[in-house]
Image (cartoon, rainbow, N blue to C red; front, side):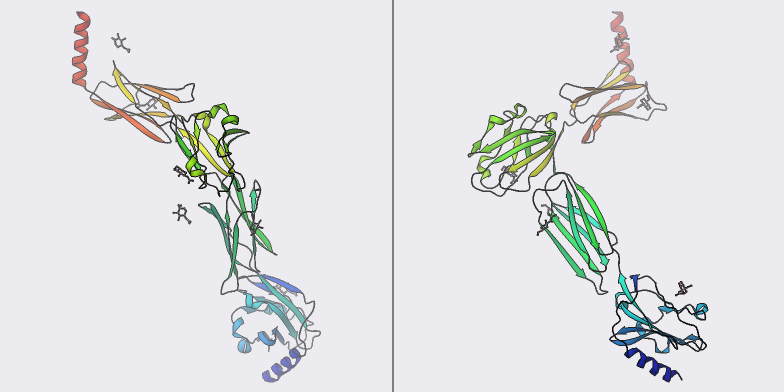
Length: 420
Ligand SMILES: *[C@@H]1O[C@H](CO)[C@@H](O)[C@H](O)[C@H]1NC(C)=O
Ligand SMILES: *[C@@H]1O[C@H](CO)[C@@H](O)[C@H](O)[C@H]1NC(C)=O
Ligand SMILES: *[C@@H]1O[C@H](CO)[C@@H](O)[C@H](O)[C@H]1NC(C)=O
Ligand SMILES: *[C@@H]1O[C@H](CO)[C@@H](O)[C@H](O)[C@H]1NC(C)=O
Ligand SMILES: *[C@@H]1O[C@H](CO)[C@@H](O)[C@H](O)[C@H]1NC(C)=O
Ligand SMILES: *[C@@H]1O[C@H](CO)[C@@H](O)[C@H](O)[C@H]1NC(C)=O
């Protein structure tokens, strides 16, 4: 009986080949999927799910009131199920688990004595998952994987650069048929936001990152090098401009010489290029006597070159000498000419039982630098007082010992003196 049933089925199935307009089910890769089918219930139900794949592949069979896994193709082993309690009601829907790309195609749902045969097309998608973006040196890279159908990768940059940036995309198909995609993009040296979108017809995911221009940390009062290189061309034209809301001309060079005429007075006599290196594509600028007003973003423009290069200048004035001294019963501590704003902290050894009365004052001078001073009422014992002045760039500490014996003698001596 079994054999005759199968023979009948095969004859039936080969009669039909391509099926136009079959309803479509979209399944997620790795997930479970329902292939719907209903039929006119009759006694002695016989159901076959068959994949039409050039040759027919037995997906699931049911007769004599039970599943018949015997003839099931190994591809579907353990992945298919009907809804047994609903079969008598005419429901032959099939649940397919752990869907993979090989499952794509047209399926026939055959119920004996029912017509017409029902066809369903199964397509698989693997949605775009995490998109990773990162910056290494001057290149942004972007990655995603395990995607189907084939994805695309697009960049968007804000602010929009004047010219197209050098970029590459690589798509790789893994052994399951899913796609990995990666892209890289040469950045412009400016404050920009890079977004990378990976998408296919089922959706998109975007990852975003911000690039800040390279930063040059300059010491207040010293000299500083703002790096810039360009593709050398004849008739070199160079401009260094500070982007400060409005543009400020910092240094210009053309007709083979510096052009101080349009230079902003703020920079007068403080800037220089390296004339013997310009022909080699070096437009680096040396800035002397750096002060706090020099902080900000600078653009290096070379005619015929793109993109423009940017660099951010920050100034710091490190903590210099810290002075500590003891006057009567108070330790005072001082330092000055510091940027950014410093803090002052005390440490005392041995640690006193209670907090000591102390004050700290910070004062900003007319150059924008900070002076800091602190005072601390001492305890009359043999102690070591340390005062630390620090900001985010470093700390300096000054230490002094208060010696009880010495202090007493000194006190006595003072008393004697005052009596004299
Ligand atoms: C068959 O039964 C399943 C499980 O209850 C249900 O999800 C599905 O919609 C039913 N299909 C049809 C065609 O009745
Ligand atoms: C980044 O630049 C540094 C210095 O130029 C270089 O040593 C390093 O190999 C570069 N890293 C990559 C991933 O290109
Ligand atoms: C990527 O390169 C192509 C040419 O290779 C260019 O058309 C496109 O604009 C570039 N993309 C970006 C974001 O610059
Ligand atoms: C330009 O030349 C100066 C002076 O020799 C050097 O210090 C700097 O590294 C050079 N910069 C570039 C970008 O080549
Ligand atoms: C220290 O103490 C002496 C005597 O009490 C006093 O004359 C002097 O003004 C004090 N010095 C300070 C800086 O407070
Ligand atoms: C300084 O005074 C503050 C409170 O005004 C206190 O919390 C702190 O512990 C004191 N510092 C020392 C070293 O005693």
